[in-house]
Each structure stands twice: as C-alpha cells, then as structure tokens.
Image 1 (cartoon, one colour):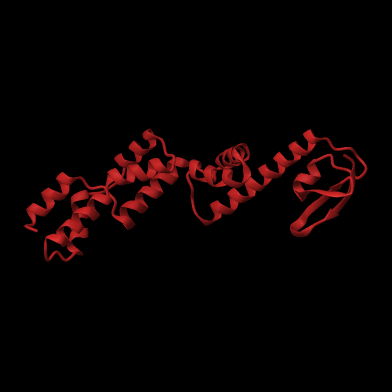
Image 2 (cartoon, rainbow, N blue to C red; image 1 turned 135 degrees about the vertical axis):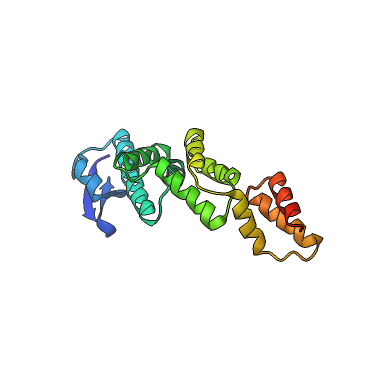
Length: 197
C-alpha cells in the first residue's frame, strides 16, 4: 500500500490515506514519532505497529483521565483500559502510571479501607473482601487491616442505635444487614443479646 494523502483531522489527529482510501486516524504525538510520509509504502506489519502505538497512547491518556477523577488500584485501572484498548496497551499504561507515581496500590488500599470503614461502616472481613476484588495482594490487605484503627463493637453499636427494632422481622433485617457489612454471626448475636434486642 502507498500512502496517498495525509490531512489534519478533528481533535488534533492526523488522517492517513493509502491507495486513495482512509487508513488511520493517528494522534499527533504518535504521528510525529512514526515514519509515515506521503508517497511511501506502508506494510501490514507497520500498520499493526502504528495501531499498537495508537492504542498505547490512548491507554495512557485514558489512564490519566481516569486517575484525575479518583484513585484506582492497578488491577482496576488495567481492567478498565483493556476493555477498549487491549491487554498489552493497558499493561503498558498502568506500568507507566505506576512508574511516575500516579498509581500506588498500598496508598490506594489504605485510603479505600478508611473510606469503607468510615462511610460504609464495613467490618474488617468485608473490607478485606473489597480490597481483594480491587486486586490488592494478601500481604498488603493484611498490613492495611493491621493498621486500621477501628473498634467493630463500637461500629456495631452505632449502626444498631440508628435502627428501630419493633419485632422479629426488624431484627432479622438488621442481622442480614450487619452480615452483609461483614460482621460475624457471633459478633452480632453477642451484641444483640447484651443489649436485650
């Protein structure tokens, strides 16, 4: 294929045509690093390489955009990126974000655990589960939970004090709610018995 035309496109991209037909829309930064020239030949392998560079560029841009809204774990960010831009581009982008200090699983785990404890009133068991879902490793989870200042009995008391328990149905609902928050049956049972609910 011969590159027959190169035109500026919308959003700062460069439109590349080969054999008179549209071929690619290339971000300006990727285009400047490429060897694309009007009148030169372009092979399928070169198109494949440029497409990979485009996806890597888009993945890094998307990663920066996502991280500007809120912190992410490495796995969470990588999963979001690979849906549209492929596994390899997602991996390159997350590694770049990690390298420049915008992505740190340990910091993320601490902040997320504190949020779950204070705002959701989750027990440590549920916090561990949520951190695991975000791809945080067992060692980091253990470290975060060991350093988390929380008194589960005190939290249970706060939750229960906000609930009105008038009958057995209310009590069952409360128990189910507390179990979803990660409290064990023995904790809940002990607490409800001690307060004569």
